[in-house]
Image 1 (tube, helix red, strand yellow):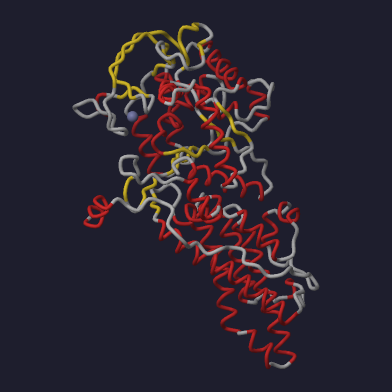
Image 2: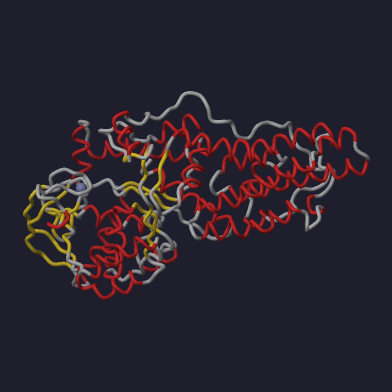
Amino acid sequence: MGSAYPTIAADAIARFQRLRGRRVAFVTGTDEHGEKIALAAAKRGMAPKEHCDDVVASYKQLWKDLEIGYDSFIRTTDAKHEALVCQVLERVWERGDIYKANYEGYYCVDCEEYKDEGDMDADKNCPVHRRPCVNRKEENYFFALSKYQAQLEELCSNPDFVQPESRRNEVLGWVKAGVRDFSISRAAVEWGIPIPRDPKQTVYVWFDALNGYLSGLLAEGAGGSPEALASAGWPASLHIIGKDILRFHAVYWPAMLMSAGLPVPRRVYGHGFLTKDGLKMGKSLGNVLEPTALVGAYGPDAVRYYFLREIVFGQDGDFSEERFRNIVNANLANDVGNLLNRTLNLLKKNCGGALPIDAAAVPADHPLRAMAVEKAPAVAAAYERLRFDQACAEALTISGRGNQLLEETAPWTAFKKGSEEDKAAAAAVLVAVLEAVRVVAVLLSPVTPGLSARIYQQLGFTQQQFEALTWADGEWGALQAGHAMPQPQPVMQRLEGDFVTEPAPAAAAAVGAKA
Ligand SMILES: [Zn+2]
């Protein structure tokens, strides 16, 4: 779930920006070089590339299952990526920012990073992986990061660059403590891009991988000139990354770009970590959260919704399968799905399944219309701030008001024994509720694209009409009199049946309960 979570968030923001009419280039991919990958491949008795092909195939399947609509999937073994890395390296070299030196230090292969004395414990263990770092001594090429000290301080002081704020303070702390040159080549690692000026060495995996943000934008054969990159969309508006790799993205990467004469990304957003049932996930605990199992059992909308609705983006978050089911059932199956289904059934029974009036004829001061009109801009503002939780909550207040309206007005009573006037008023309630659900479908579509498409289908629209939506379609008034609705069917199944994730380990759960 560690990779799926930020990818879901990136997809939601990409979908939102496309709805807003902006040109979007959503790049994701895989870092395939380096010692860690070579070791993992060897363990499986495979060549590194073969191992990576396998990993890529499973990621691509997972992204398909989760309805991740990326524009580009870049592999660092792609020819265009390798060419781009060599180009950037050459520009940095020409700038005079690369020199050769001996280096001795403690290296964590899992981090692919040399650790400072202060980062490790007395036994030289990596603080992240809790495994011993290995002493290494080799002659490497170094990038003169320290030349960019002043520029990095200025960049990281900009409140828009690193977010959220707590992360910015952390990064600013590192930078102010003084940045140090880092080695950008490895003499002992074969599985990497050879340094063109010295093919006995390969490019350090992070120097290699970060350039994927550039190569991922480029069409085949487009070249990596600053002009080609600019017309492909560089600089990026946003990088979404785990907080554990902030140093690479917020310090190393901008300096590399400055050295290569390229603009820096506008924003680097460090998201939080996930726990399961209140516990850190780990193979040893047997509680790793597999997105494949979740999406297989519950479908993409439920998974996307839970992680975006339940976790404040940027903060750490927790998954419990029970809470996941409760939230999805309450919000999507009941508040939205059941509201739609109930109303369509009432319409079918009492109005023959076609709308009696235009939604635009619902008075502007009608409580449901007023709520929908008020909430649409609030939802947009929340997406802009990457507050997916607030975007969902604001959208759900509209369906909440719709449910309340049905209870207050009880249109079924009017249809049974009311006057003609009462019946017309009851029919208008149904139209208002259906229009409100349509608005909710548009507003939630960055988070739950499949559910929103099914709602649109239930409201008598085609898939093409759904795919042509823009954010402006979230305004009130699209449903028209005479518009025919198909046979009512549930749009969101309730989540039930056997649990599919590992239960919390008993011993650890007891400790967790005490805490
Ligand atoms: Zn480590």
